[in-house]
Length: 332
Length: 270
Image 1 (tube, rainbow over the protein chains, first blue to last red):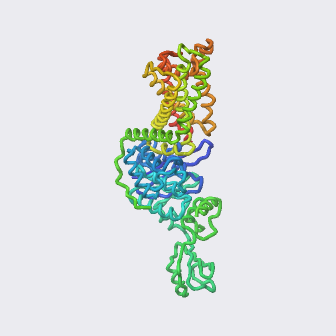
Image 2 (image 1 turned 135 degrees about the vertical axis):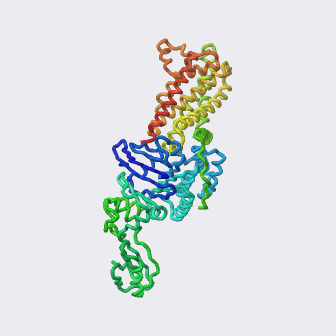
Image 3 (image 1 turned 90 degrees about the vertical axis):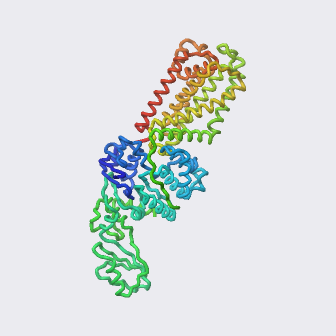
């Protein structure tokens, strides 16, 4: 069964903006699904319609087979949502916020109190439970929204940029937490501007741009379609001149750093073989640019991912969608 | 973050149970808000009522003498109680629901499985709770200034509950349409206050000329105050049966309107 099934979903706002232009999308039960797109692509509108915060113009959406028109209450009881913007009462305590949220889903108060303790402890907010929420840090507020969304133990958890503005340590611990929830069977739909986050966590991906789904694939399949990647090698001994690696485009960044472009028809064994033959000892290696980011930029610029220009070299994908890239970079 | 231990998914509770618990949660939250900011929700009504009793009851009232055969302070006491009930029932819902809209935490309820009629009922009940709390507080104050005789307890309770409900629902509608804090204050300032002052709180409409008396009957607050006053004094400017019928109809119409608007997403959804 699909956790989410959307057909022909359209949304035209009163000001005439067409936010969604006939979206078709299926998310399988148990999936960890990335929904990516530049700002204004329609992600939040799509989530808003599924969670009934926005009225759709046309189309159909089902949550675990429950149509949001015919069985709205049942459909909504399956969903937990962590919105992009902070949307709890800043003057209430974290404990009150999560207990009340459970109440809105019909969880009796004694059970809600037990769950509040469990989730506030798991999200490291238990010692803050009695203070006003306004005093929480940005990361704590984000975690509070996750705790709140889990109080009724939803089958589908929708996270709209849950780690925005959260420091790297907290973000990584949130990733672990979300992985565990997913492993327990909760379907997760994640939107994020941190493409590394989507690449790390998600098994399937859809990219939305201009109100349309422009790509829908398994994450691994999509990444395999990347034409060229650039790898950065740190070497032990200083290099006096750029080494010749036959068949590979090479750049000497500094005397200890070498960049090598590897196309999808080649493999890294060849690079290592040539480096070894030249007596160059590699200390470490990394991808120069996030692979998903390159694919993302190609798609939102209207180029296909199979376009040979789609490569992980610097300097590409800087066109009309530069704003989206800037956003992704600004979040690092 | 520690290990997640989600239990096996429990079977969903019946939707009626969900609605009942959801309704209670909204009311408990509203009650918590009233108590948390009691200095803004309860105290001002008590101070206002005290001032009215001191100035209109004691200072002016002595010169006014009897009204409809009753001591003036005794006559205005039900009106002053009702005035505070009206203002506070309305004010509670308009402030709380608009605050939830403004702070976006209304979304907590909108994404939940609660149907819109439960949300309206919960907020309206919250307004009634504040109306009753203030009503009791002002009644206690009035006992220091006037002798309150209970003529018909059921009429008192029915009048205060219906009036409180009507204005709580009115506050909900105001909050739905309001786009900023200024618009939250428009109705109380330009509609509610004049209607209350002309609603027979401080005088009997028998003192008015015929045309003014006819116009006064259009004022719904006159009927509410009249029905409430009847419960204390056994006399009223209005027909009690008509007054209660009007109140029941008004409450039903306002409730239906609020639910219909919320279903359409007026003021909360695009």
